[in-house]
Length: 300
Length: 235
Ligand SMILES: Nc1ncnc2c1ncn2[C@@H]1O[C@H](COP(=O)(O)OP(=O)(O)OP(=O)(O)O)[C@@H](O)[C@H]1O
Ligand SMILES: [Mg+2]
Image (cartoon, rainbow over all chains, first blue to last red; front, side, top):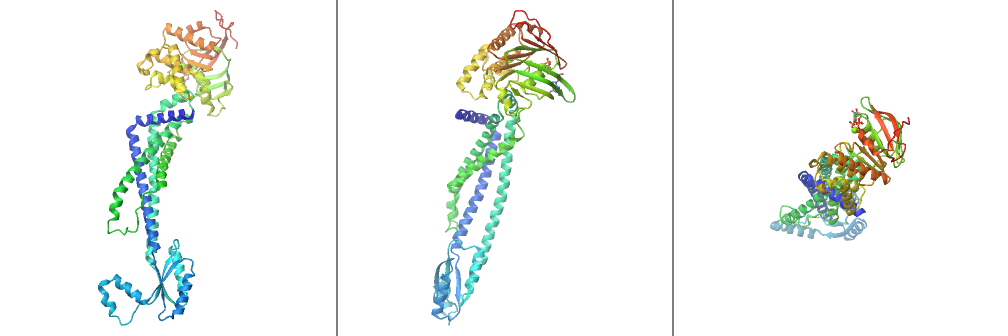
């Protein structure tokens, strides 16, 4: 019984779509376009997030210790740093090591460092933080606390960078969400108008169906199916297009030297996002047709 | 089967299509509603069918008060009532078969069963040779018979027929009236609205005379299905 009805309703919905094939195809195209835009936003957001995380994990916090601090006090400072639960790893950088790494970074200028009478670089501890402790506020507090350890001269981390990147990320996210919401509503509106057209074309049939005793639901369901079918088709198209362009672009992007993407894989949407797009497409179609039917189809 | 209490239908702005109608039609009756054009016959049938709400009064059909009933019970009532519309109300883009099948599709019946029943009814109205035609390709009388077929295809407990023989010649009128009689003999209450007095030879159990919206008289036949119809005024 239920299967028979499903078959009947689906057949009706397909019949509706075929009657206005062009306008339905355009609607499917629009649904698919808006899903593509939304998913691109999602991909950009995911990639940025991943990049931010990787980058933050590498953010070094340098704790410079006072000049000429005796070794036992240096050990005490190290111990105190280790006591912070945010700290994952601490390594000691002696002034000599600091010079050496500078020379590695600027190999051409080796003679400059060699000509120095006295090593101007202080000894320091380089701290790596545990994942999840890199937010700007947490870093600020941690830096303050570290600075209060006796024997510590100065604490340095890429404060401006982190805060700048974070606010950029938030900005991009907000813009994406705003545009995304507008797109969703516009799509629902377009679907709703297409369905309304079919309903209008079928108003005579609807009237007669009511006269022979069709319930409101019985009349509505084919139109709701029509919306769902449109949404589903749109979503499938969108997924195909997204995957195709992802395969084309991802390889190319990674090999572009102007983008610092070596550490990061561009994320294609994970499986559950694919499902999300399918369900989102169907929900858009369903909502669109639901609104289209709102005013019509009362028993008379 | 049908009861009307002080039913009024006033069309805007202030036109009384039906005024203070009090009627009682029992199960199994064969009723004629007769009156000149504009008397309110169609309006009366539509009121019974729930296609128009009365301005005033109460209507009870098969135990359901159509005025007070929830909107969802009206479709359930209509599935048990057949209506032959004066203007047929056929779908012009669908075949004769589809038009008749529609009344069974809303019941959710199996395709096979629908097919069997539709063909059976189309045979009864003499349209088996036209099942694939669309209504505009049919004569007025043929269209009327499609409308009749659709109204009886679901074995209604009540058949409301609005001028069902208006476009039919004498021979087909005879056939259709015989069909109505058969359906009536199986227990369906039949109410036929017409201005054609000749139909009185088909022995109604009750005759309702309408004029300018008011019931002029209700005549009950002395002997049900007796050879001679002797109307008597009961009002
Ligand atoms: N929807 C409507 N709006 C306004 N007036 C209407 C409406 N329907 C019917 N009427 C009026 O109500 C009166 C009764 O109409 P109705 O259709 O019931 O007559 P009838 O007896 O069926 O006539 P006929 O034999 O010509 O079919 C008519 O004068 C008609 O003009
Ligand atoms: Mg009429």
